[in-house]
Image (tube, rainbow, N blue to C red; front, side, top):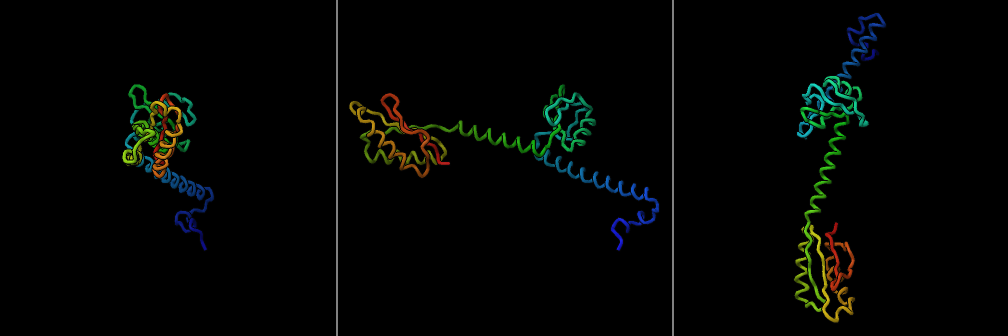
Length: 219
């Protein structure tokens, strides 16, 4: 049974081994070209969706400063030469600086670059949210009545469920300073009742005439 390549009419008509080899080489390079064209189109599609970075043929500067994959400066290159270098390395040409007077491109894997950038943005947003969290203080006392305790407990739970931290404070008056364990018991009872929505971030400690405990939303 003839192989697929031998059923090609042009291939079967060629008696010269050299010509047959040339035909096979042309077919190989044609397949390679189509493969890289499809990959490049996929990269451009992703870049267009991102709408924040120009990559490969999207870059319209005639000359750019090129930075290699390992961070090495390769000098100012004609855009076509820069694209050739990136394709030769099997990577992408990504525009990092769009300043018309000093456009800078780097030869990197665009998909990996995009993933790392999105990861950095996500971490920055997370950090920003953490910085924007408010710290609300709930003041208790050694002799706090049950109703006041329960009211503050309900309010604290709602606040914690919104993602905020709370500080629980017990202030000692007069002779109460001689028995800090009483204030500690009140604070720890408050924390235990909120254990389903919070974790203790800082254990009770004395600061002047007050004892404080810090609770953070449960992760």
